[in-house]
Length: 121
Ligand SMILES: [Zn+2]
Ligand SMILES: [Zn+2]
Image (cartoon, rainbow, N blue to C red; front, side, top):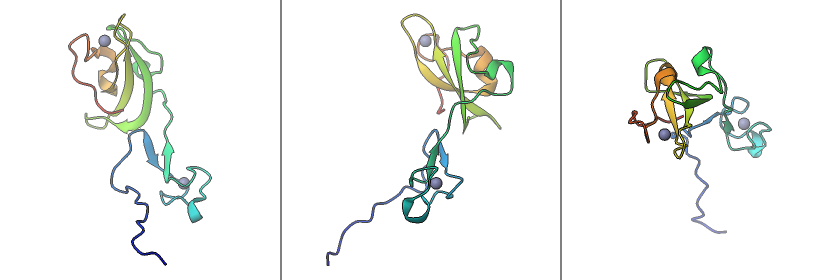
């Protein structure tokens, strides 16, 4: 019998961006890690979705040439907002970053247009 083998630790407190606690097993991975939905990881990947307004639809391009790729429901840093994944379409840039839903229509690229730094998405 061997002592001292370290049990694989699962980070329970840190939230993984773009993932949510599995709602089938509530994050414990199911019986013997056999949860069909998350494969036993306890996390499920969130797909990008359009928001409810014109400027938060996937594919929307704002006046600064920033394209919206949708949201995974990750909270933004503005009250009650979710974060959207944006892509800068300016030639030679292509920056990918996150922005609050309310900012999408007027967002400037943090890399080439002097916009605010991106947030998690
Ligand atoms: Zn699960
Ligand atoms: Zn840019």
